[in-house]
Length: 292
Length: 162
Ligand SMILES: Cc1cc2nc3c(=O)[nH]c(=O)nc-3n(C[C@H](O)[C@H](O)[C@H](O)COP(=O)(O)OP(=O)(O)OC[C@H]3O[C@@H](n4cnc5c(N)ncnc54)[C@H](O)[C@@H]3O)c2cc1C
Ligand code: FES
Ligand code: FES
Image 1: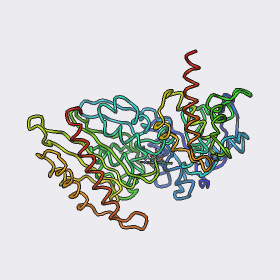
Image 2 (image 1 turned 30 degrees about the vertical axis):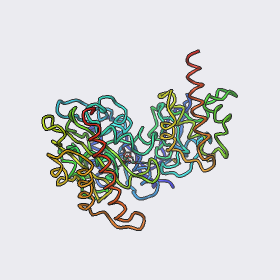
Image 3 (image 1 turned 135 degrees about the vertical axis):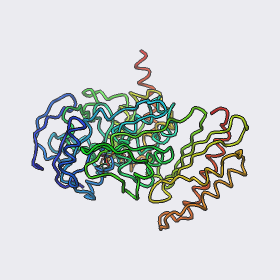
Image 4 (image 1 turned 45 degrees about the vertical axis):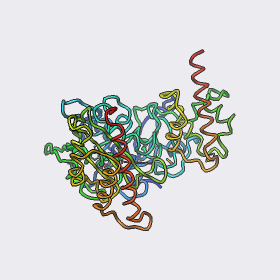
């Protein structure tokens, strides 16, 4: 399996890359880590006439502390998200999820910008972006746009990205120190794309002992794009998490989703996975309360 | 300009001047143009790990990389791992523990773990299995590969101390 012929461009900075994207538009694709685009080209599922290689744009490979916001450059590799101490401290949910992406060698090259644009419905980073309420920063020669991740991700492998735009950064709201983070996924073979992914953050009310003050719950693999379960989050607030509440919230979540029916993974199976994984995540969180 | 372009590639410390079409996979350039056939090609979509080499010291799939991208980067392939007839501790351990049968997957596994053990000298079995999930082996059942990697890590740690 070999890619169809293309012309290769290797811009040295972001402006040069944007000019190339403006010039070749619909016939050009930016090349990030190549860990999704490479297979697509090899299988001839994509045949762009021009590849604009972003790998020399080192100014897009960063994790920057902006106070309440942690900004991550579009070319930042999964491996860095999985291992950098500042990511583990300020965005533990992201760090946990990044450690589970594909395999060690894949994570060395794959980038956060590429993952968001590829928009696989079961991918980890789009799920975390939706759960944490990330802003996606897009640039073109026309200027800059900032789009919430939930709007950026439109459908299966379909995103709000102009033909001449590239993802230059993602802005994450910093997680608070008293927040519990849980990420879990289920796949048939270690390192494969998930059948279902569950992302959870939970903060307990310091005064009212065990009651939930704030919860964020995101699901991947259950629809065309990752979904944030706002109604379930609201139902959790004010309640302590005991076995009964965890089971109730998990069952309500499973009833609220509408996964695709297919021969490989029946909808009922996905629903049961969601229920079990959410129950475990909630009880785990409750168990760790106080220890963080 | 899909026509061949001139590039120079640094592989195992040697510089090679080549003319390659941009679409030519790094795995094919290593094997066909440079005759470094130790890098194997299985799936050509990133799944099997047979083509894993080091780019600037980090394990990467040669089948998901184009040779034209690699100017200015240092490539390391399996051919450079042994020192003449002397195997690296990892290769030696794979040999002693019967960590390979047909050997198709072996180069990719060695390249992945030369880098992994350099950065993580004391992994436990679960960590090794996590990383090994990126390399498919149809022969061994993996048990002896895991044993060999644990042994190699031990030998390398001792080597560093003495
Ligand atoms: C064996 C294997 C297993 C994998 N398992 C998983 C997994 O479990 N979970 C998971 O989430 N992913 C997995 N992946 C995919 C991996 O995470 C990719 O790295 C990721 O999906 C795409 O990132 P990339 O940088 O490699 O992008 P590329 O492959 O380079 O590009 C992907 C798409 O994004 C576009 N693009 C890239 N960068 C930008 C940018 N900055 N701005 C605008 N457009 C851009 C490209 O044009 C292309 O359309 C796996 C891949 C392999 C080969
Ligand atoms: S040939 Fe590259 S991963 Fe299979
Ligand atoms: S030894 Fe044959 S594939 Fe691994």
